[in-house]
Amino acid sequence: MKFPKLKIGDLEPQYPIIQGGMAIKASMASLASSVANEGGIGVIAGTAISVNELKTEIKKAKELSKGIIGVNIMYAATEFLKLLKASIDSGIDLIISGAGFSRDMFTLGIENNIPVVPIVSSLKLARISEKLGASAVVVEGGNAGGHLGTDQDSWDIVKKIKESINIPVIAAGDIINQEDIKKMFELGIDGVQMGTRFLASLESDVSEIFKKLYVKAKNQDVVKIISSVGLPANAIRTHFSEIVLAGNPPKPLHCTNCLKYCSKRFCIKEALIKGHDGDLEQGIFFTGKGVEKIKEILSVKEIFKRIIKG
Image 1: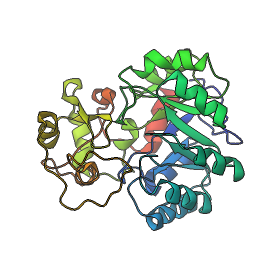
Image 2: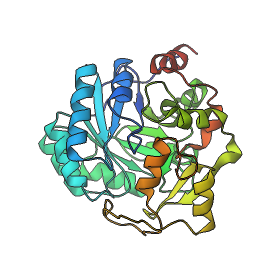
Image 3: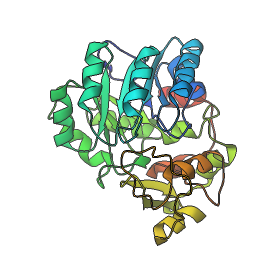
Image 4: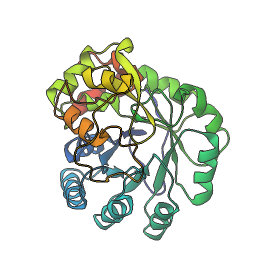
């Protein structure tokens, strides 16, 4: 398979593939370094962990790989700026951020010569990002995993954005296999971001129960909940997601004010941690809509092999 060249600032990975930064603690040093070693861009999820934890993970990833390591931190996180500065101090190569906008991150990126890549879901936000100094944008559709900014699928919005801005456009949402990637590149996209496929890898930090849930899931098992962040999110249908859909989830018992805004209807952080640990009763399991295409848990090396060679 022939790949386009992806250049983000001074960074140029061997393959135009970015691993999605999946919180909480789903994509850490082990996964990010493995992706970087295969020629992609590995990304550590910096949301909802402490500054010291993030520094430790970045250091570990840097020791395990000579490739490109990025960090993804939600702007909605209360500690956003502290986590961002800690990432820069730890020598991170790339900053990715979604769920809101921050002029500070562009300023810090420019001052430290670190490319900043916001996650956007509309042409308006893509144009604002370019104007503020973004080195590229990740265009994420409503078919992606995690918190979402639009109901439109990525396939329906990336081409228009690509034709309207002059920085690289990276597509995210329902990109699982070589066929999906090829389809995106045929639209003229510069790169792809893949989360769901890499979560179901040997190197992912979530429990085996979580990974096996992905392998078993069908399209009809994916439901859209409203997170306490105030954004919709795709998740696998489980006991707790049904409770959230019904509108009567349990209120947080010990709120740590980890988010700038939270409805406090339930604790999304606690639910995601329980999902990470494989708690099928109390956990939330975020997923992209293309999860049905995942048939087995693979190593990162095998995932790249199948993408590259088919």
